[in-house]
Length: 311
Image (tube, rainbow, N blue to C red; front, side):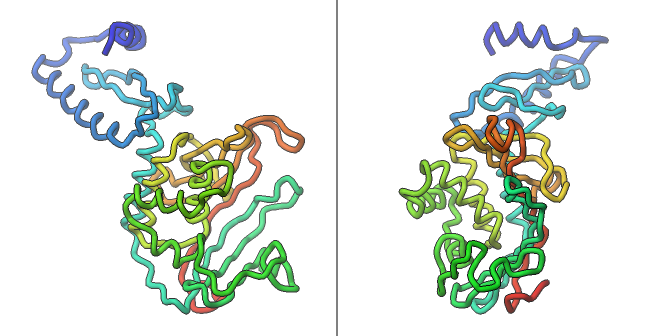
């Protein structure tokens, strides 16, 4: 700690009161704190510039915590806010505790969500139910508020889905991904090369799509979160709400144009994935800075036998 940091701590911390701790006890507390700090900071990407923020005195000793991302303090009242790598690691650990899906090739992945992506068109939130073939050999089904979006056939854009389909976004693709985060990220970079405005932005978008629309083996889900932690520009937002009104903590990344921020929302207690939203970063023709431009909340996931079958 340099002299400037010492001076800043002296300014922020209240003067000690009472007799304080014995010197040997104070040294032990400091060692314990530094060990905990080392474990947490090991998960932080090198690109993040860290700063010191003082916490209240603990039993007469001093407690310090790294809570700065990109040199700016995170918003909110929690003085021990985790950085993005820590949040994503906790989400990975939660995913690892989930049971492995017992999916046969002739079954379907069912995902139900509350969809509110068409805010610019003045549409209200709607229930979205999607059935996707596990092995890609059978045609899926998409219902919005219980109805086909295009009664004449095809997906919500009026285009027939390819059969069979085992490309990016399919269960077969996700289940075959590496469980090593570095290898997984390299695979996604390779598979999305030439798409989107840049490899990092496209990788973040692709991982978000997989988290939102698929079921994956626990080890793959965990690797997806840890791979996302390696993408530059990922930050944390302390307090957000998903489309279903559930409070959470978000991992976020801005687009390359600095116009929109994508946020993945996690439960604050168990770090399960709740949903996603996008937020305007600048005033535009339709939205003002800070407006939610689109959002969704995952309500249910399951493996079912037929399209149209609900768990």
